[in-house]
Image: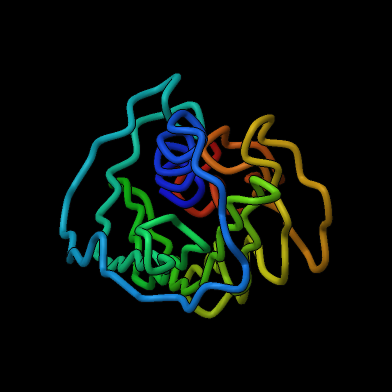
Length: 174
């Protein structure tokens, strides 16, 4: 979810040719405040593991825009936190995550701070960790700065080292 909403919002701002006045006082406005509880089955090719996985997402996301007195977007903030549980008939792992993302329409970048992935399976410790700080160019999706372990980057593409996380869900080897 991160960055996709900012890209949409930023695209609308850029498309209107809005000029941002940094001297103007920022007036906050909540754009989205939502609680989500959904179950999705990721099948085969759509799964990071190559086999069916049931994903239960429970999270809260709040997006706030800060506007000048003329209504021009000065900056945006997204705060999200939640839990994702992935399961199969053979195992389960839990991802407890929380992050803040700040959007700058002038530089068209988003800066992400926090735990994007922190996946645990039982007493086995952390299987996949994606945390710290990222600065992302919203036009290209390129990471301009990477600080911290970002084992799941880029998001939504299932890249990174998912071997241990998938092994916790896989059938036992014969």
